[in-house]
Image (cartoon, rainbow, N blue to C red; front, top):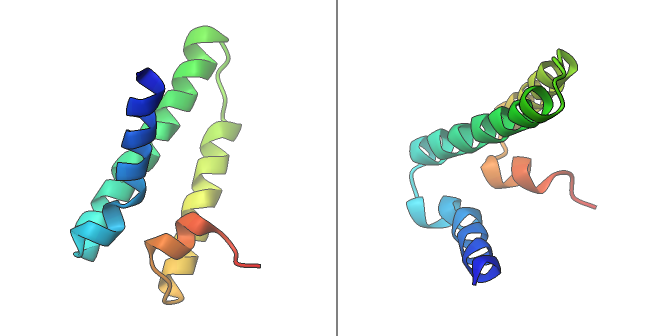
Length: 86
């Protein structure tokens, strides 16, 4: 039952850009999810492992910079999430 709920939640999150329609709300949702992943990663590093990581913030900054460059080039959030096309 837990796996089914998790799968349904992931499918719902993956389809958010398609049913919201407005790019402003898609941008806000993407920022919320990215900061949540960042916070979860820091929670694991600091809380469970007892490590303070500056590299974690550096990787987050590089990813944010790359995503901003891709979106300034005219691509949308789906292109950033999907990564480079083959």
